[in-house]
Image 1: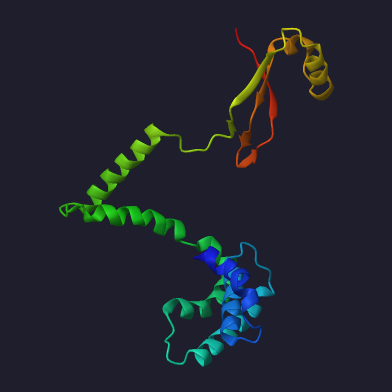
Image 2 (image 1 turned 90 degrees about the horizontal axis):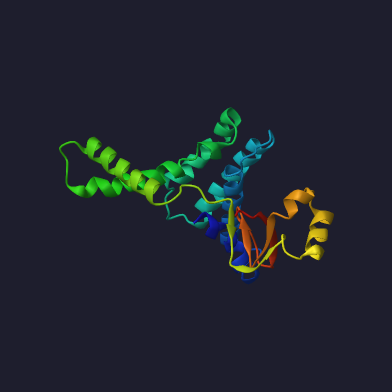
Length: 205
């Protein structure tokens, strides 16, 4: 929902008049959202946010007189004061806790109400143990693609050895015990490179 709200102006921006008050009300709400979700806040922002919220609420009442304020719109009034006292309130965001609670809500419908806390704890520990045993919790730092070619430097490969000496600080004794592997692609953390990659790997007998 947050992503849709942020890209929505790019989708309909060229189709809406700049004088459209409904669109203006949405853009004001988007400005408020960007400030509230910002991890860094300067001292001048809370007073500006207070005025922005007041203008948005006034325009909302004017445009939608038959609609009532939902609690989340009312809570916006208190955000400037909270930012002044506690700094960025995005650091108090509970979205991750709500995501964790979703699992327990599903388990709570199991039908065992004798000791619901014990049931939830036991089911969660089993779920966690299953995931710890079946896969790694962390993404590998380096993922290699298919191997296109392999060349052992112990063979007749003077041109490759000279190229390695020019670009990599490797002792001559270590070069001869290495293997040059050409990969189709390689992914380091989250960055992926699709062009042919040449890596230098130790060769074990």
